Amino acid sequence: MPLMDQDTQTQVRELLTAVQSPVTLHMFTQEFECGYCKETRQILEEVAELSDQVSLQVSDLVEDKDLADSFRINKIPAVAVLGEDGKDYGIRFYGIPSGYEFTSLLEAIILVGSGAVSLSDKARAFLEGLEEPLHLQVFVTPTCPYCPRAVVLAHHLAYASEKVTADMIEVTEFPHLGYRYNVMGVPRTVINEDTYIEGAAPEELLLEKLNAAVRLASKA
Image (cartoon, rainbow, N blue to C red; front, side, top):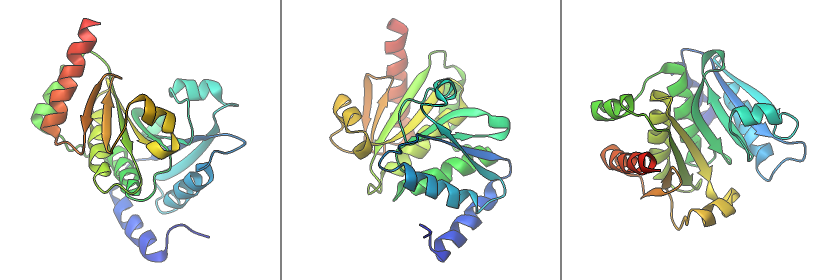
């Protein structure tokens, strides 16, 4: 039974007309699938059916360990959103992209397939001068209406700079990470393990935190 009804399919198909170049949704699962692996795969299959530019590739975390390692993927379900010729922009989804996070998935596909980056000149200048790598982990839940804003901004930063990687992490599927990073509310963005920002922060505030993370990294 499809997860998307006809009206939703029509809306998604229309949104995906913005995708002008090939996008691959590379999902990692395993033979004995995790709690939401099956549902995640079904979502991706249904989305891929709605655009000739979107395709799905499925790999096994264990059997394809070298491939998973090359994407720095160590938990499932995981989705890497790849561009033409498999170009990796460091955009990841860990956990099912359902509820409000379905929007984040569509936004990531459109971003990679259109190149339409939405960042200020200040953010672009920051990224151009970036020398230290930045890893953003955005903790979310599917029922959080503010979370997609934080995820989409992080993914735009990753798309615009090879120094940035950005993960959506559905915290209820990875409670050990929620505990590790003291996630008491969502969205919560963790930058390079030791810098944090709460809520769907505006770009300017996130840039301040990114600068702080860069300063910490340079002292290490």
